[in-house]
Length: 445
Image (cartoon, rainbow, N blue to C red; front, side):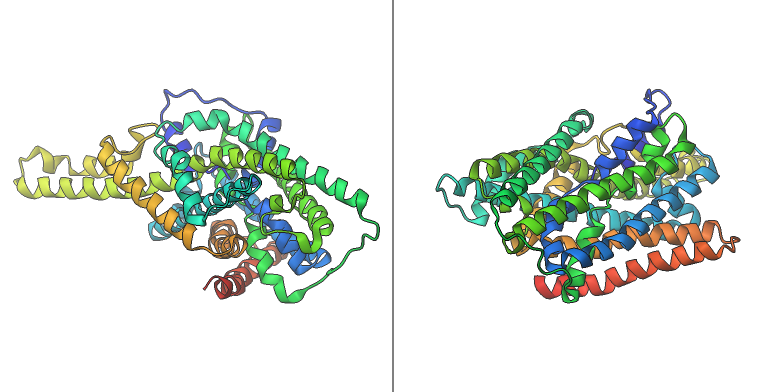
């Protein structure tokens, strides 16, 4: 997932920065790219766990909820008809500042969770690749090796470099998907008595839901991609088509691979490839894709955290100066209102960074990376961890918040059809949050 909402807001508030307006076709492919993340390569194993037929029934309401929640955000933006409207702006207008802060915290936690999942994949991929040349390494050793690549990426300040290379990451991911399908085709050709087994398994239902939700992780990019279009009002239909294509790729890959590998389906489907050369090539390709996406996932979370610290520091220093100069003639006191306004826009003073002082950036990013590495080392199973992230934060950000703001914004609407849509999405999200979280914690703890 490429969450550029925070950074895009900075760019769009600077009239001097030239904005390239995309066509409907470009927006279509951009939105597909933002919805194909790490959930795709974990979906096959949970598909096999719940059964091929039951996975389709489960995926349909999740896909429907994702499409409708994205359209809810677009409808609000179209009605406001305001340039540069973002997810957090809509939350602030409808639910208030407190909920906007809760949204920021949820975004930080989900993005850090995804970075942890990326790191787990990179670590396991490295261990699996080395195993092919008879080199065995522990999880801790592999994590330490990844430090060489991941740590420098976490300190990138000019994120534009990764914007220009992210498309190559997308192509790398597609190439690894093609290798999976090629291996499946080869295996099918040598299997004499192929049969579909384990069509329905209700017991593992909520092992599936959270991972499936993370296959629909593009809610953060809905409004920025809409705003980038020449004709913003075309994006509602473009987004629906794009989402259905991304869902089609996810469900097709999961059904084909899980039905082919069956009991040999690994927690990461790339590990199921029997040809060692193809397996290593696919792991390298997907690792490249995630390495190019990792800074894009981490950057918005870092930017929010840095903004919070900068805002608190600015408020403290300003208030301290005002107290020391509390006479009526003080220019600081006269300009207190302007100072408060500057606090809100402090993150817009620089395009790709919040703190001019590198010391603060190093402390914040180092703390985040230490946290990410520690959790990555402690997580025993990637699919259960992704299920936890998707069940809690994916449901809140992808489903609950869009429904609530749409209900409040269009509160005078009496459409029965709309009420039914609200009910379906909220039922899906509440069940995912409660039961999906409980199921994940049971396996992780």
